[in-house]
Each structure stands twice: as C-alpha cells, then as structure tokens.
Length: 360
Image (cartoon, rainbow, N blue to C red; front, side, top):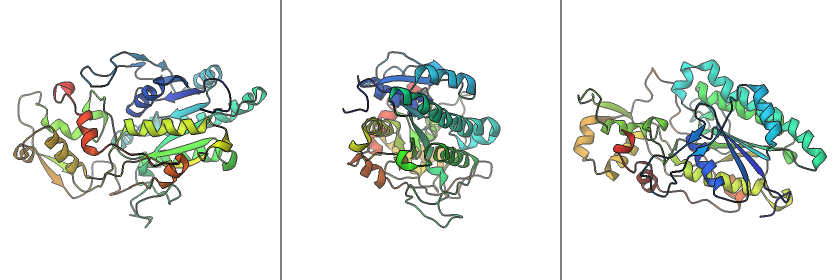
C-alpha cells in the first residue's frame, strides 16, 4: 500500500458501538496498516453475542465521547490528530427522530458541521508537518430522495440527482451533507469531504432485533411476555427497500479508505458523493417471508401472525418514500471494480443465526 506518509494512517470512527460503526471498526482492527480508534457515547465497549460463527468473542473498548460537547470533541481531535474520520454516529430511526427533534438535529447536523470545521482547523496545523488535512467520510442515507413524489425525479438515483427529503430524518442528513460540502468541498479538486449514502442496513451481530428495521419484523415469531398470542400485525408491503449488510458496507468503506490514503495521483477516489447499496430489492413483508422460510417457519403460521400492508406508511409514523434505489456506478468507477454484495438469503442466514434464543 502506497500512502502519503510512511506511517500508520490514523482512522477515527464515530458511532463505533452502532451497527455500521462496529462492523467497520472490526474490519480495520483486522489489518496492520491503520491506527484505529472507535468512539462511543451510550456504550464504551462492544462484544458480539455468543454463538455467532466467525465472530471473535473478545471485548473491544471504545473511547467515550459526547460529540455534542464541541469543546471535548476538539480537544480529543487535537490529541489524536486523525487522517480520516468516518462519521457513523447519527439518530437513524425516522420515527424516533420525530420524538426528539432538537437532540436529533444536533447530532445529525451540528456534530457534522463541527467535525467539518475541525478538519479545516487540523489541516492548517498539519501543514507544518507536511501532512494533508483529514478526510471526513460522512455516512448519509437514501432518504435524502423523495421517490419522485414531489421532485418528479425517480430512482435509481445518481449522486448528483436532485435531493428532496420528505421526513425530518432525511432532511437532517441532507443538511449534514450540505455542511460537509460547504466547509470541506468548496474546491472539490482539493476537497476533503466524502459523502457516502446507504439504504436500509442490517447487522449480522445484533442481539436486539430492534437495532435494524430489516430485522425487527421477526419479533412476530418471538413468544410474548404475557403468554398470549399477539394480534395479527400489518407489515409494510408498499415500499421497496434494498436491505444491505453492514459487513458489506464496511468492506466497501475499507476499500475507499485504502484509496484515500494513497497519493492523489495514484487513485480515482477523491472528495465527492458516493452510493453504496445492495441491488437486491424487496418490501419488508417480502423480506419477512424470506426470513421465515430460511428459519423453517411454516407459511400458515406466518399468515396467522402477519398480513401485508400495501397502503403506505401509517399516519402515526414519519412519512417515507416508496423507493429510493441508489445507483452505485460512480463508486465502482472510483474503486476501479464493482463490489459483489451478499445475497439476501446468505446475509439473512448470518443475521438471524441462533434465532430465537439469541434475541430472547
């Protein structure tokens, strides 16, 4: 690997206790090339559930930091002096976002703006040591698009397609993108901001089905606490999703990092916006049907517990677009090859390994 300096590049991951953050942290800890540090706030360590195949059981400690404490964040960055910051920390649940608007906007927008400004400050300090300023890789979402409802721009979406989010979560991530562009990519030829949009994600090491909307439907197959059969539930069969394993996304991010630490003349990966998403689409109801089949749950039993809902999101939830499929061509061009994503069948087998005991 040819890098801009003959030393271990320092990689900082925010939100390293979350699904994507811990997958990327694990990916990078598995290589000798990087000095890696993970940040957490609600949890200061991660440890996979027991019984997962091909997963180490050892505990990984994280540095506890509140990203909304800008003074503490600046002090930490000054001490660690990263080469790349991967900003995974976010409020990523649209409905939860609605219940805590101010704090959610603070995390998704203001922390991103502060990190961007810190990258500019650090770049000035690095000049004396002949170091380039740090890159900020900002994890965004396909929910910056509206599915064509208002924009009349329809999927699949390219990085430069018109963004028009229809819920507060999507709007916050779009505003975070704008902060990265305005602060770090004024001159994109020398920019240090990399925006990565992803779709619905799922983890393969979750201990709680609620951690991913791609897994939470499986709660219908868990015994209820009061011993009574739950009411038949409606599962979304309207919106087309593209469930993507965080293991795949983290592998692509690792490839991107490998390019970003190279001399600029040796890579096609530069500042800008990129999409990373599996091409395998389905509704949540179709996904639940697949999950149930993989676990050998009889179709008749599934039909007693759930029914597909083709009416769109319920009025009580945050609005959602029907389809926000991402076009990843520019990402594969920058990496000089197309990444092969896990099939939904294989990814879900790993994600649900040990069901139901693992999630009970």
